Length: 353
Image (cartoon, rainbow, N blue to C red; front, side, top):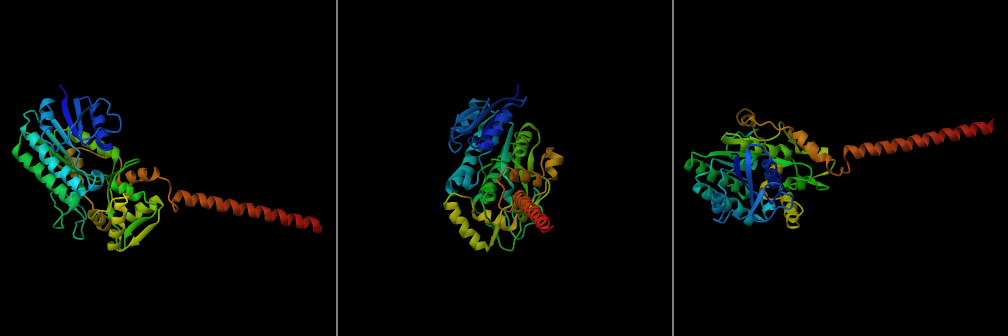
């Protein structure tokens, strides 16, 4: 008999796509998708249960369906969860209730948490690359970074209380891909991209398809532990902006925060405090354990993942495509003018002759 998997967060595109892909795996018997609202797209063979993980009723769903694997994909940044208060309740209280439900289940064998490399934060004291045994270097984490640390702490506590359950935590880099509506993708879609004056942060990206494949691989593997998941290599923010062909607007950190606050209120893009820190100092993670222990290898590098995303956008005003088109137009115009001048000169010679 195959696995019975419960997936939280299926109302969002990534959760829905993952649940649908997992349901097609030969080792999976059933997939139950859970969220407070129905998904917008087709779930295929996935059964949908409308339930709030912040409510103890989630325990009844897990027990009734005899779930042996839980994949928790509902830990979201404020911009994706409807604000800071809503995100706090969903991330922290929701995880606590979900783990309490898992604690009661005698059928549970595997718990997978989709976390984020944002758990390390971003500061001037960061190492070049974070490994899984490192913590955030800046004390007093706030917002989404604080939520992630609390969530992972609760998951570690659950692993101690239920040593019979495999617990796998995936700290994934910023997902990016055509059509993906993450806060970072919205930032890169701005016509003019604000940056922090004097800083050029390093970044790592993970293609959205690779992200889904990584979670599926972890779900179907018998490997426990914590793993950084990212595409190979790093990109500087300046390189990413040049690839997009959009002009950068360097400004002091306090000005970026002020402009970001206005954009956030207008719901244009997320510029939370931790997002501004990321755009200042960046972040890099070591992925040796992902390859050697988890056995997962992303198909796209960081640069390749961003390249696919950039190619899906309308070219910026200073993009390579538009510059080449302008050069071709200019050369064509110059060539036409030169031919006309030659014709006029030839006509003048004939007339004098």
